[in-house]
Length: 345
Image (cartoon, rainbow, N blue to C red; front, side, top):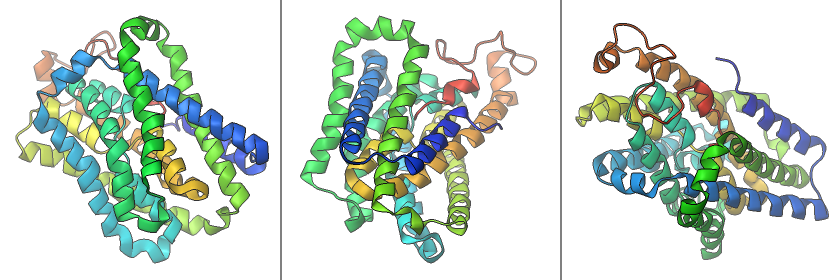
């Protein structure tokens, strides 16, 4: 699979922050701009989500509880199990790995991959949104309990996260009636807003890390170990969500939604929370999340394509061969191109 151009943009942003970090007044401006950009990002999330779809999705409570359990129970337990690797991984990177495990699930990429694989698209839409909302509360709480002193947890940090993420999301829901049509017509342009928001957050976080001089703590060996640990983590979660959902008696379409929504982590949701919880250490804290983000996109793209060609999927669609571009996947109205998954989440 080719490297996602957006990941190249993220890496370029890190490089710019390393060469030209924001200092003084420029750092204050960058921080304020990134805060505003993330608020806008979650406003758009709220405005895009149909309230009716969200309410309908609540009926499938067993599926959503399963995804939430994978995201906020299974992932953290696996993160704790990796604690023995701290001597070879380094404490800062292990802290970032543990933070990765408490971040909510993705939205856009879960929907895109579920659609490609002919899964339950409405369930993926609701699951990603529910996970993001639950993460506003659960991520700081889990970070405080599991990471401890390395994460600055307080009532003030909760208020900041709520104001930056939840309030804009609810405002988007409230104004959806008036702005929903505009967002639908300008979906492509607004996709750049999504990505630009995250690039701003990355620049602000990594600039602060450069100014504080924390990058001397990372070397090639630590990064190689981190990539290996994340590959195992992703493989375990993909297997657990697929076979566990089958064991629980879910249909094929629901298992697909559970696998893709329950095995991935949101870059868009994790970055602003890390900035609030870790301060100057945020750049190292989000490094594992950035690497995992690219890994999950590449692996899930391959799995989604294979799932779309399963004999069971073809039989349900009444097709005699692999799906062609003229045949829409399950979940009308959702793009099935792999490019749809290449978003900021």
